[in-house]
Length: 133
Image 1 (cartoon, rainbow, N blue to C red):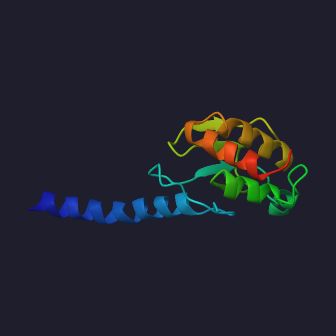
Image 2: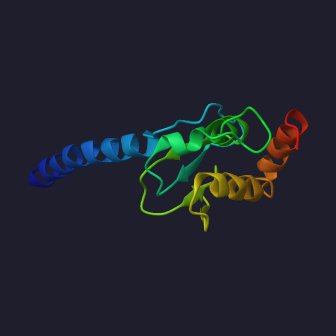
Image 3: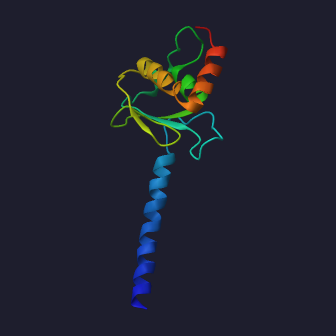
């Protein structure tokens, strides 16, 4: 009987911890604007050391699309600002460390990286068809 009470007490302690860690995972400064139906996690995550989201409001190359819109809409990616490092987490959970330091270069690096992924190839092709380059 005592072991059952201890087990119940432990469960009651761990349930809030698990719930809290899941809510942290779902928090993002700039959430993905589209979700994929092909993976259990329907979007990628960009963790970036950049803390000012206005830096992602610059226009992407010769388009009228902002950097954050390109990343969040066309490439199904949420953006977490003020992170410890620049890293892209794919829909299957694979982590890619990014070498770029500014928003423009990060966007280019993300597009390049995602375009080599299975789902990302389709996203990249669709993006190229819709934007002038």
